[in-house]
Image (cartoon, rainbow, N blue to C red; front, top):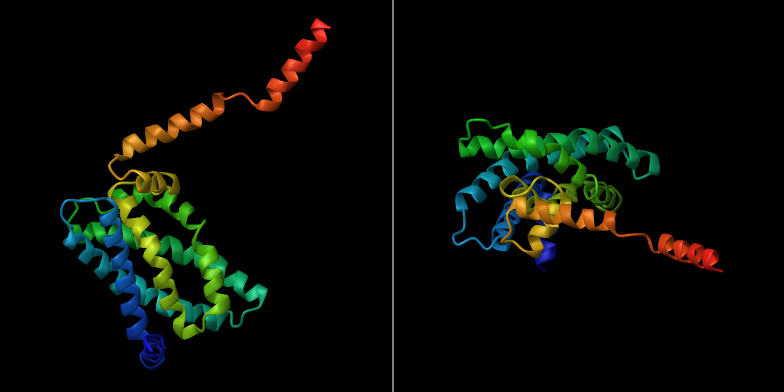
Length: 223
């Protein structure tokens, strides 16, 4: 029953329903981040700032952007879907990431609203390339146009959790975010040091095939 009501609302009021749902899910991602971080008190002001940016820009932009893509490249053929994905990831994704970092910083009243953007934008965009192309492929193939922004909002719930962590505690990389989920008490520097240590251990660990070859060589010499 609820699904029927939701679908009917999206059909009758597509802009309002899509943008509102997108903003609520995006803000929900910030709440999840704060719960994972095990903060003593919820930072409702930060959640409010995230919701403002999500509703005022992300929800509205994606609503009209997805319609513009469909008008320019209609249909679900491989060529049309590829063009949509290419434009979405080369233009819309960097723009949305930039607005998130600068928009939330502006609402917080930071002196340099581009500080987080300079430090974390490129890593965040690269991480997004491991997530959004697949999600948007499903969006373009499976969802009708009037539901696509809402579907993006569902995907953005997880993405917003990652973005809020990256802005407050991380560096925009997936590795640091996963390490944070495993142990939220660690600082960014502690997580980075742990990841560097793991990489160094892997580099120093000798290859099994190399050890086996060396053993056979030693046996030949002994023989």
